Length: 101
Length: 390
Picture 1 (cartoon, rainbow over the protein chains, first blue to last red):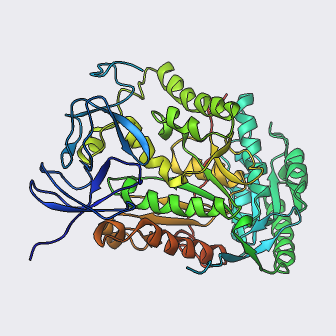
Picture 2 (picture 1 turned 90 degrees about the vertical axis):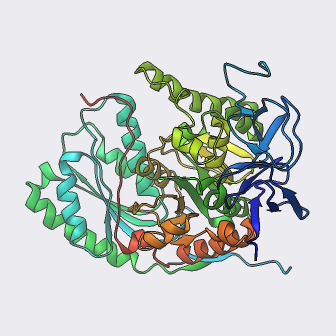
Picture 3 (picture 1 turned 60 degrees about the vertical axis):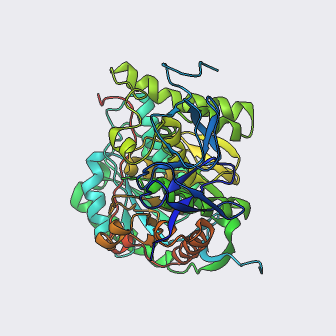
């Protein structure tokens, strides 16, 4: 029997959740902590503790965790993608894809 | 759901504050008197010793911090009465320290080693005074209080990938609850807020508080820069990135979440006494022991301390409740950790559900249940300093 894969939404405003187990591409992931029950399909391999997008995020849109922006998307991010250094930049980064402000 | 009752049994103090312990403290006003003071404290069962490495040969800003810390700890409501042990020639004004503590209405006694004829006379005199203070303190009885009488500190140390997911959010739930029920919460460790200034100031009560907050956080960046260290460039660390943290904002938010989400009422200096209710930030270093000492001086009754790797650290004045979100750490270090928050990760339990359990433990500890650090009698105490000694 397949083990339930879970991710935790730390704030209802967030557009990323945290993987509570290692996720494989194609895994159905139950996202807990939101107002409504949400199940999404992982697109990437996502290690424990790493972020998974629970909504599409446009290039330069805010990535929101703990209810606050933790940076901007360096490119379009689709729901189920791993969100990390390859597609997320700090708001205070010097080499910004999205420019300052 | 029926409204839960959140009550604890504490000790009423003359200044209207409430203690969760009923301790008699021995405080050396200078390092030269510290071993005599420690021996006096060791001779009476109810006594705690407050370590002091300073009190002389300090530049004025540091001498002020030492004074404020000792005075604040002496006034902490967990302490029923105080014995100050002075050498006699130190820069820190011992009599003024006694007066500052006595302002809270509790008994304060002072002995001066050079005046009573040396260390052995001081020891005998000190033990006699302390026995009397302990006897007097034993007359105070616990009474029922609600959360509006609580002053809670939150702290983290030895963090790992589970801290920002389980232990800190669960602690943040408790912090919000204490604030919502009329209590006070202190969040410290300003260097760990670097990168989250812009987000934090949105929660400040006023533009003045926002300005104070930014200044307190940026000061650490400048201080490090003045000795050639770039605090921004090294964050998040390689270990953080492997653990899934991408940006410095995210790292800081994961730490700050342990203070909950409410409005920041004010920014306190290190060891400054908290006035009023709600959420406060205290400007302390990230060093756990120094930060805990500052919060104890600020009037915090007990602290929730989140840890990923585990630590035995305690405090002489406050119960320190250790919480981990890492199930392996809990298993390995259960002698040092009071609460396992890992079921948020392993069993998919909600932050609220586990947070309620932690709040119940907080109330039990406030009512007298000893923490693991108390059972071990771990009483680390280090006072903050900025400058070299003279």
